[in-house]
Image (tube, rainbow, N blue to C red):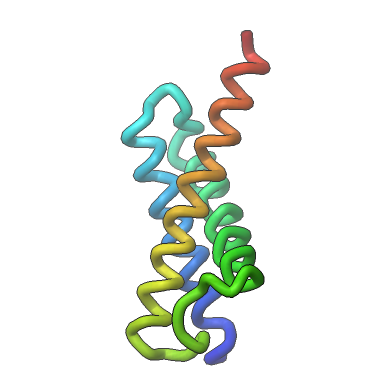
Amino acid sequence: METLLPLIIQLISGAVGGNVAGGLFKNISLGTLGNSLAGIVGGGLGGQILAMLGMATGSGGMDLGSIIGSVASGGVGGGVLLAIVGILKNLLSK
């Protein structure tokens, strides 16, 4: 379970990050469900990519640095993926 905790934190913070980005930038918002789904996927991917690049903080355990790193990478990943999907959606709808 300890190895799943960072991923769970990244997915949850990704959903939050996606909804925050959708709230801040109404033109790329996909609605609450769409923002959440894009955020969850982005949070998971963002956290995994940063871990592969060696940029993730901590050892993946329960220490404060690992939790903060998971929240940050998940939230940013969720917001970034939502922005990409929202921009693509807007471009394709024109």
